[in-house]
Length: 371
Image 1: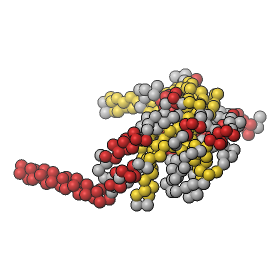
Image 2: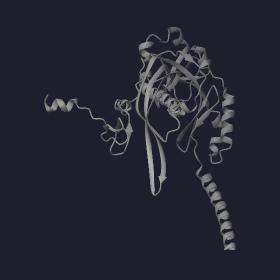
Image 3: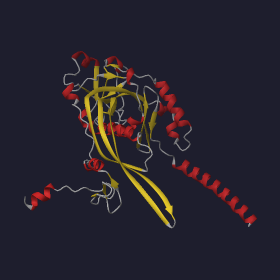
Image 4: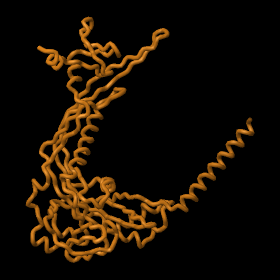
């Protein structure tokens, strides 16, 4: 055997603590690191040696197009609905045939041009609205009432009434995710003897594996809607979902998806993977440190649905900036960014600063009295 072959067949073991070479100790019958003092048995070291650093989650689905290629609008439904395209931002919505769209729900500009539905998928499911427009307006008014730094424009009744009920397109992902995760963990003990202080750190290899069923993990299928905004109004109760029927569009708008399901797989996989790892993390207690060294996550029986979820949208312009509020049309939960009135903010700062200065002066005076 030449030197090259010999080099390729020699296996070097590394200390899991400091990554230095570790050797077998005849006296202890264990593997021992002469640099940091780490000691562990041969079987455990082999477990560490097979851990691959930084392996990422691998969750895959068949695309919606592959599984549901025939789910198109039929001729009767196409007669009952209309598609409108905004000439300003190119956003599109669909609604019943008698609704006249006047403003784009994305950019708040006047629209509209009727267009045909071509090569677009019909929703599998819809969650009907449960919160009425009147309830949405009342809830928003209550939310804005105690915001002292909010510009008065946001409390103008005329603007609050510009609430639009819209069905937002979502892809719902189902799968059984299973995986294994390996951790390196430590426990440290410290003690003193005479003038010496000792620290002993024990290293552990922890493994977790299991299987979790994920149902209806949502991903926003519209590029016009802010993903963070849509995730913030979750959750929805999908048990109340019904088969899609064009009757549910009466009086509402419905966004048309412009992001395909396969473009969202990465984001959904990360969300599921984080949930699975969080579950594993919760089972590890009593260690000073722990970090993941290996993870392998796979899915089984992946499935995707195309659903329309109810959202109330309020667009308000202030100083040339468009502010969007979103309310869950099923639960009433809503979120959105709020502008701050600079004059009110300055007055509030002066009031707080002035009060702090008075309190500070009083304390200083009290100290001077007892000095």
